[in-house]
Image 1 (cartoon, rainbow, N blue to C red):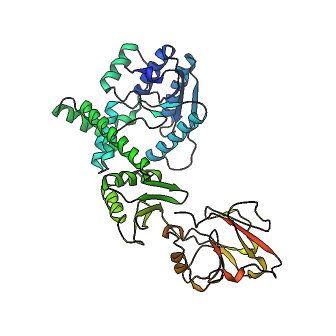
Image 2 (cartoon, helix red, strand yellow):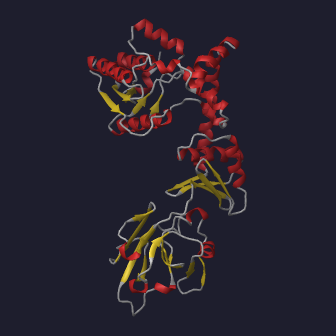
Length: 423
């Protein structure tokens, strides 16, 4: 059913729900693991969505693995959040990461050729990019050994080998879009065009090859650049740019993207600097020959009295204010007694002004423009300010009003991200 030689001498952990597909996969690898030197283990996730039924499924898996001495890692979802299908998917991925960090080389899921067809059709229906045609494919350490097997082949294996399994009744309801495709759309397509599932699989493999090529071009040409504040996408041909944009969107774990979103992002890449596009809780900024994609850029309403500031970060940004001179790295220094008692640590506000070190005064916005500080960073840079007078743009420059000189009695050191070098 599966060629396991490609996984010879590897440590594989099978994600097992107790259902027909995952039990078939676990049974097959267990039966053939010795001839290929595979070190087998399993994981089971109890989402607690179906109450006693899901517990019974987990108990079934535990019993099966115990009888065969298959090491099993069991996960129980105890979150108090509303349990949706999307949150369950994210939680499962966290479980996979846990076993990978614990020694497994791969996590194998039991997605098969029919699942692949459902995925391709679902992606097409929701207007995803061409990459949606790739369907289900191995991604890093998450593998899908059954993806080249049909539903019928798996059923035949289960019947011929007496593989025990349990049924999840939710798979047979039409409460979920994928179930509707599985129960209604695919059967009708197979009636209309024999071999639909296999034909979709062939198409998805060709699409996957194309996507690998474009992914290589994106890496080779350094189209994407990631930093802690966002993702930079360099302007390039539409066919490559849109795929790079899709990678960036997925980096933020967004799923409901459409071709229109990708089209708007590509148009933004040639727009004048300062233009922006907001969608899916993200903001994209035109930065001249590139765009920067970030989480929604909201100026944080934080205001901490300077005299009591003891944190080491503010708004997720590193900021340390100390009297001890750092041994190395970027820092600013200021005259502590030149900073008034009303000074606060905050982010920018309308009307802020800044007097450059040994320079003239101007609006903070104009200063940022002169210093070529990207738009997406401007609300993320911590400031030390007294009213609308900015005394320090942390990680960039101090105001002339707080510079040190021969009369300085107490010097403070401001350590922050080096925003001058973030592109």
